[in-house]
Length: 342
Ligand code: H2U
Ligand code: ZN
Image 1 (cartoon, rainbow, N blue to C red):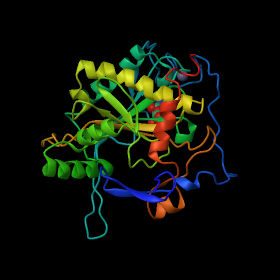
Image 2: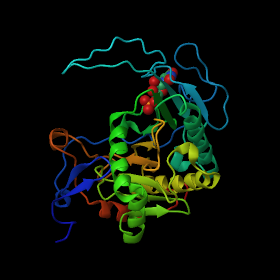
Image 3: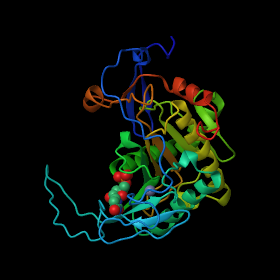
């Protein structure tokens, strides 16, 4: 039976949940919402952008005239250092205090360049910032979430390439689940789940999109978003701050490759939310953890039609239309040279 034609379910071992795969549905007609793509030509500097060098931000703050990357404390943080809050604890009503801090990372002084269009050397600067943020905040917080929302389709507020860091004194729910599943796997197999998984993908070679000496991008067997990718290190490492200099250099290279393929797929600046998951800073062993990045792009069949995670997905479980193998095949088929730079 051809998995590209028949509905079936696939298991996500990281979250211990199932996804319904319905590859026969992709040809259905579409008269619903279409996304608006980013304006194609942005200026390299925008006087009204709160992320451009030298410009003013909320309050009376002003960005320095930065020349590579720039990190600042989020002016509208979701977490605050002080956790004064009176918690409630009963059978059904529970709350707890939290503390943390939020930062914004400008990837480049250029208003018009996304990571896909930056050079490998420029992307290396972003990698260094990620590693340094993890090194700086990791000892003080149980969790440091580094992420990027890119594109209007993902609710990004500004096309100037930037990411965020939210550090908290608690381990968020999805990460806690990945901790439980990887721990259980390690107890059974004495080997990290995602290292075993990548080894298997490199042998099967039907879902690998691109790879280099230290990293591989795969469309995971259990992907829920149409062109979801998982970025995995070939040499097991638990946290960003534990990456070797070589792994950091190769990371910039693989990001350039993977993100270029994303943009080339529909010849548009490909929207996504991405973020890093490494071992929480809980003081315990971390040998069951493999550092990885999730990339969740919403687009399904063109730059204007996105996948909606609605009805069945909200009420029952995730569902996808094309198979992960088809998605990987399409991402492999496009050029590794960015369409704007050819
Ligand atoms: P997003 O585009 O992913 O929402 O990130 C932009 C962040 O920038 C957002 O978290 C912050 C918002 O709080 N921000 C500032 O810190 N200062 C500003 O002057 C505007 C926006
Ligand atoms: Zn800008």
